[in-house]
Image (cartoon, rainbow, N blue to C red; front, side, top):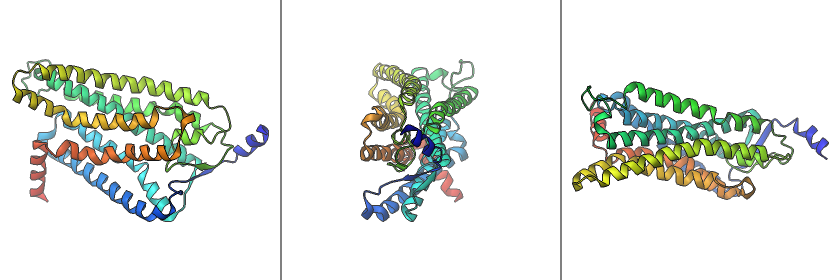
Length: 320
């Protein structure tokens, strides 16, 4: 039996992505909804990015990190949604093995980048609130030892993108070398680890162990930095004597804290469970929340009550 399947799996060159085939009457409405959402993601994050790049008042560490977050939100939704829109509109749901593995790698890459970047942004907020005189030379005199200098911001960002690019490599190599001798149907709307592992007839325990170990190393490191930063931030805010000072300090990190809660709330529900408990409809729902909710909300979260962004958008409107 295994010899036959081994011979068959050598010919696997493509998969069928089921998407939402169990909801045939919703294909057109889903296409319209996802198109509107994707356009909002592109427009909202591009507007934030353009405002930051074009306004020198926003060339501070916090907004430099935020511009990277906007690029990231556009990037990882663009690895999923355009292909999903194409499949919903044409009902052609075939994807090659190479394209499937590539999509999985870039999804993991961008998701990992966002997790690390949110941790770096938490550290940035920690320095700004707990060590304000050492935050940046833009705001404070040069005789203080500057922690968030432009050089360090560049190093933080370079380290974030490089570490995130390396993290999914082992996952990708393992998945690419699995013998796919079961169904060729990926019961999801994109190529993720769990639905691909389910298609293999071999023992995939090594893939699951590698997934959890690497995820734990990177995820726990990022989560620990984020959590410890907010422990110190909250302690500092509580020790501020004036109510106005506490409120002002809280609002400098409130937007980021909301993003962190949404990110970990959706990602933990999606990834922290054994592959054996994989439930297609549940995974599709949580994946949609993870892929769509954060990029849609981030531009609103960071700009809606931000006076500097409002001023930046007003300056931009004069030139449009």
